[in-house]
Length: 76
Image (cartoon, rainbow, N blue to C red; front, top):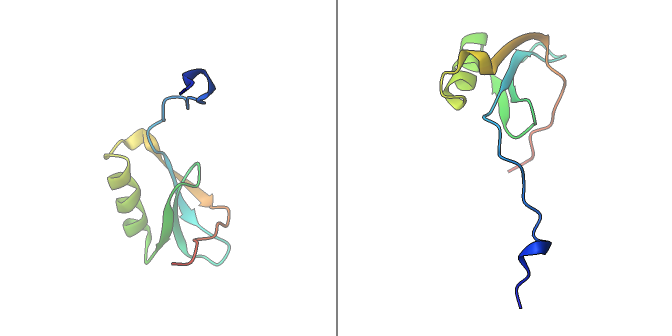
């Protein structure tokens, strides 16, 4: 028998939001605030373009910060 009362229902997913800035090695970084995705970019414009495209060009969803906390990109 299948019991639906044992399924843990996740809350509604929030739309993505990004932080854009430089990391400790002065590389441009865009990272989703929950760490779901992100990357290193050649320049500020490329990082911002990625973040805006990922958020559907929602201006309130992208924040520029002076330092982005380091994060690790898992190996392929």
